Length: 234
Image (tube, helix red, strand yellow):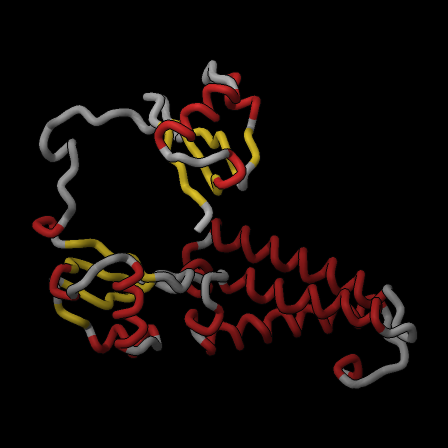
């Protein structure tokens, strides 16, 4: 086990063994830390992000270090990463080991305190996530799950769901992405040609309805109905 100690030179095999040990050590550490500590990154992605950047950085900043060790280590880690991904897809047992199951946090408007402890998050974090989803009351939540990627999925009680055209059995208009005509005081002439308008029309429209000039416009968009929306510098 001399390859674990400081050495002036290591063989390719010793560099590879170091990489294997470091990889699985970091997987265990990240697992112990919990998903909140690694935020939106998946477990294996975090390990790769931590290790590879550090491996490549050292020989680039230290002239006494060669690239051989870094190259061998990186190759081994990439192979281990690909094997791990294949194992997750192939064997459910490995998938359960690496990817945590969703943790129940809220059910039928009631906070599951055991779930908060298991996910290692506080009630403040839960309420913050609720506010970000524009949910003002926990009682409105039918189900909330702590996902493996560190996010919380919320499902509102059906009686608190927003009313949609489908619910009212009405036909909704198709989605229309407005086109940007002016951005930061500059006109996009190609867009004007597409909507069969010219700059003179735009100038006249701005003067008539907004009493302003193109240079004063931060953003101007037009939808398929020809509705022009203008946002001025303030």
